[in-house]
Structure formats: C-alpha cells, structure tokens
Image 1: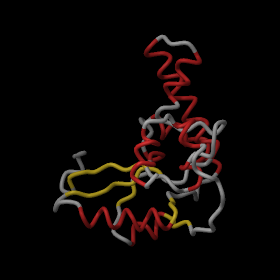
Image 2: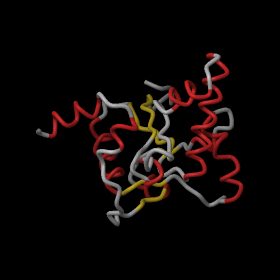
Image 3: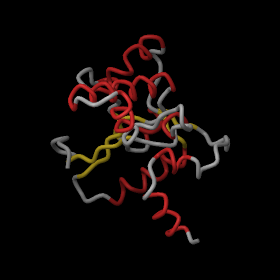
Image 4: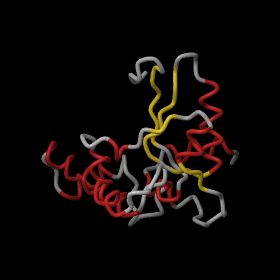
Length: 165
C-alpha cells in the first residue's frame, strides 16, 4: 500500500483507530518556543490569552502554576508552517493558537468539550464523550499529538484586519 492509500485509509478511521497506526517513540526532535517562532515571522496568539475561549479557560490553572509557559512546537512543524506561510496569498497570515499542550490541559479540554456537548445536545455521558473525541484527542486512548508539540491549532487571517479568512 502506498502512502496516499495509507492516508486515505487513515482518514476513514476515527482517532482511536488511527492512533494505533502510529508508533509512539521519542525522536529527540527539538522544541521551538514562541519567541523563536515569532522571529521566523509567524504570529502567535495563544488560546490562554483569550479568557472567553473554551480552550483558554482550560489553560487558566496551568498558566497560574506555570506563568513562563509559552507556545512551542516541534522543529519540523515550525519548518512546515514557515513554508505554508510563504505560500499564502498576499495579505493572508497564519496565526498560531496552540502547540504543545500539557496533559492536564488536554484532559481539561476534553472534559470541558464533553460537558458543553452534553449540555447543548442533551446526550448521555458516553455519547457526549464520543462526540468530543472527534475534536480533542483522548489521552486515555493514545498519546495526543498536541502533548508532544507535534500538532498545531492555527487560524488563517487577513493580515490587515486580523479577521479569519
């Protein structure tokens, strides 16, 4: 099976199924912090600076305990983002919202989303959890990419107005 066929196969699976296809091992890749990411011309506006945001609220306790925490990503992710930024049409910009997510924040985000889904849709705990897992990786199933700095939440905005494209 070639890589395109593998990608298509993975896209037809839920996170629980797809996560088992990727071996978990530390490859020693360097993490790049927010200051160095911004030096490369990427804009960082982390969720934890937005108190009205669900994810921002999930960071609240962590940020109180770790005030020096900053957005950081694996070096290869940063390199790809720089490539993407340079390929965007004039006047568009990437805005990075989250990278490495501490496990406690990952769990808090999953729980907060599950509760929000349950309240809005009157679902059972299990139904709400299954729905939340479609958007937030569950650390009880596998190692979420965000907890390794290997995933990024990003917006694409008009550079002049900062409105989402």
